Length: 199
Image 1 (cartoon, rainbow, N blue to C red):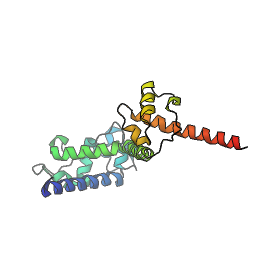
Image 2: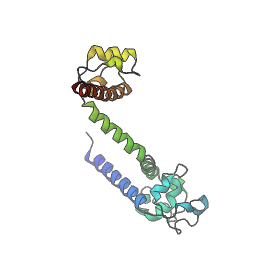
Image 3: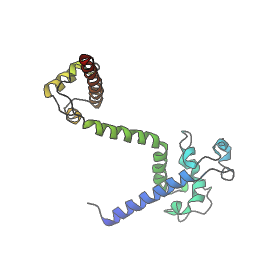
Image 4: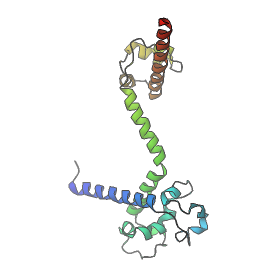
């Protein structure tokens, strides 16, 4: 649906972003890099850390690192900035909007990497749990924290899996998670009751 040229541009952009991200993750901060503008910001505690680690700090922005990054990767900054001099300390305002947007993309990815990974894990876990069967014996009315309306909907529909339950209009993801937890609880209770009954 998109042209080859647009796809090639997108692929090239992704490669540039990945290359810059790897540069930030691999390059360690040295006393030399902290000279001048960076040393005045109280960043001496960052010595030995990577630029990505520094960027994860809430008070640090990628614009503050731009002068150093221009030295480390001048090709990245050259696009749209042909008229700008070679002095890496030049104002961030002189950076083209295309480069600035790409810098912000990398910054967002690095700053929120932990949250994104956590979200991905939660989504993977949810997908896995959606395949879970809901036993015929399961009692929705015993799920405390589930509204009466939800209990009635689920009891009426009697979904066979958590995925089916999640597609019932008005049934929230939180309700599905609660049902998932209670399936575990009720299954354990039934198992214990069976074990006690056999002894």
